[in-house]
Image (cartoon, rainbow, N blue to C red; front, side, top):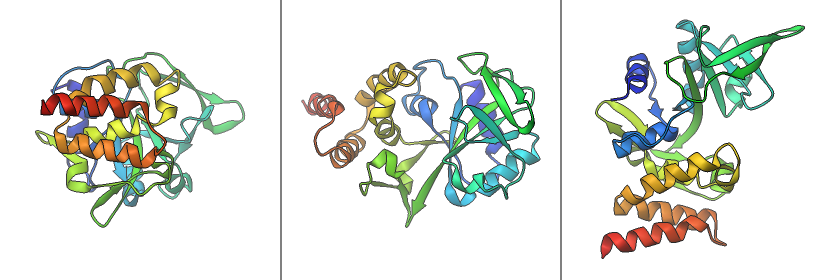
Length: 238
């Protein structure tokens, strides 16, 4: 097991709320193999535990930042901060993180200019926390990802385990990274293709069928990854 994932699980295993590893690490937990380097650890937390997550991180000496994809990082010093309930994700960073250089913005004590020093995370000192929704035992998708369509996955199928480590199911991660913004962007495009090409052929039939249906629902005019998935299904059935 990768050292970072083991440290992450040890860190969260006694918390009072469920979590699951997401992003590229989730795909590696499913595939049981190294696929590519990773710039961060993503974890998924459900909406109802937003405040619990922030309190948990602050009580352990980590810093929490909102609006991480804007120009500056804005520190969150309390779970009562309005951004805790409104932001789609937060960044949590150890004060001595080796991955970042954070410089206070002149005149604003709670705003920091960020500089990423490395493009592969080697120490357990940074976590990107993504907030997801659940209802009636089902995992729900952000309207941006689902194209405002009704796409769900049962929780017991959405969250899987590699040993004791929970992770977001591969078909969910592949659906998320099939959004055009993640396929075509300069930042995500290359690693996105590596992830999809490496993991899609490994999907069991039921998972593959769900992903095909989700893509057809979200993109009724077609999606270029559907042919790849259907061809893979045909090869499996041959």
